[in-house]
Image (tube, rainbow, N blue to C red; front, side, top):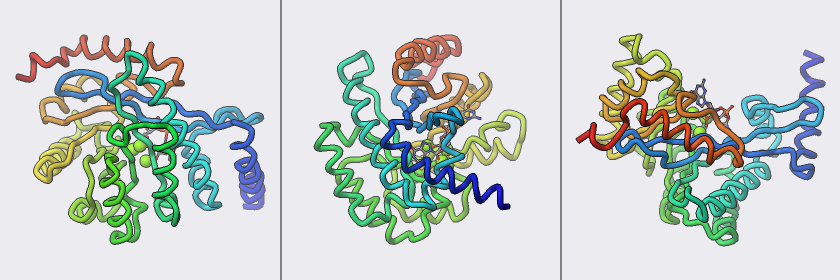
Amino acid sequence: MAMNHRSHVILEKDLQDALTNDEFHLYYQPKVDLTYGELIGAEALIRWKHPERGIISPGEFIPLAEDTGWIISIGEWVLRSACLQLKEWEFSELDSITMSVNLSVRQLYQPDFLEIIRGIIEETRVNPEKLELEITESMMMDIDFAYTILRELKNMGFQVSIDDFGKGYSSLHYLKKLPIDKIKIDQSFIQHCTRDLNDATIVKTMIVMAHQLNFQVVAEGVEKEDHIVFLQRNLCDEAQGYLFSPPVAAYDFLTTVRNVNKVVEKHGLTNDDVV
Ligand code: C2E
Ligand code: MG
Ligand code: MG
Ligand code: MG
């Protein structure tokens, strides 16, 4: 326990320095449209290149950043960096892709959050319609408050999606109440969906239900060829996962796009098949 406490403290002090020392980086993972078989977006995922510890994954420091409040400045940095990257891609062959950014609920609760995000949009001149804000359902405690903020974000033009759908509790309640565009089915359901009948049923049902509620559906953690077949057959809209590409640095993203195209071709994920 004492050891734990100590490393916690060291990390928290390091979190403070990480921003000023430019130790955070964004990686990008492609999102593929399953109907047309094309790359349509990227999800920005933070990495911390710690001078002594090497690369630290968000699972290890986001909870600490949330507890200590550092998530506010880190989150602002993430938003601005993702917008700048999206702007840069507008001048390349990636000109039509969208950018997904993960938001911590702690950010939403920040009194000036809307002002901050509006400021970033003005400063970077990104079209908010090309930005998708991902929120993890299990963390949205106050549904009325979440509704107000999400409504504002929708009015500003942002897309909103519920991340890790199915993993938390109260999921259906959120679907009923919140103004969202998409659900992202948690990877734990996708993993065995072609081998486990329960997972298959849950995934199929989630897709049908989401569509009937006018939400789009993204499958997370697509790692195998038969996942694609299953998801396409069940009319899932989009997919992300190691089968296409892991998250990569911005300078590797163009190469990644070519790999994605290869995977898409190999699986015959084309327009012709669907019609
Ligand atoms: P998430 O938003 O659900 O992101 C998906 C996670 O699954 C990423 O982990 C990604 O690298 C991983 N992943 C993608 N495809 C596959 C696959 O095929 N198989 C498996 N096993 N994993 C896959 P990562 O980058 O470690 O991020 C973990 C979580 O940390 C994210 O989950 C998100 O909740 C949070 N996170 C990441 N970046 C940020 C950020 O900038 N801000 C906030 N607030 N949270 C972030
Ligand atoms: Mg996400
Ligand atoms: Mg997720
Ligand atoms: Mg998540």
